[in-house]
Length: 168
Image (tube, rainbow, N blue to C red; front, side):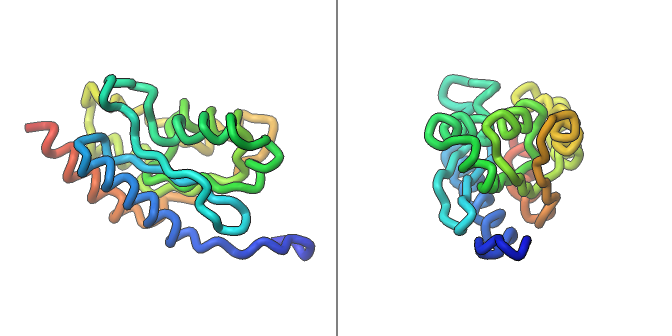
């Protein structure tokens, strides 16, 4: 934090656990267990989003992409540059691109794409694209801070419950 930055230090574990609760809500509703939060520089949760694959089987309905679409329609890139996206799983290439284009300044995630791929295998509902979000952001012209994986085993537990059942 710079000397002129007066924003509070965010408790990343607190917010990532909140994203797990959103993912668990999606799981309990029969959906894919992904959840995302948008948090401002003061620690206020501005938005929550469950995965939106159901009910229309929208393969682009990732929680991160949907919340970032909503955020970019609501807030300016200057405002979003001071916000953090907390997500239960690492943003895929599509979702990392959405974070970049929306202007989010920081992404914190739970489960890595690599670990997610090991859990889902080649499931047709989640053909995981194992491309680190850091690689996507590194190709951009502005910096996006990335923290993760964070509490990865806790994040993995939701996916193990869901995807192991889907393999039956």
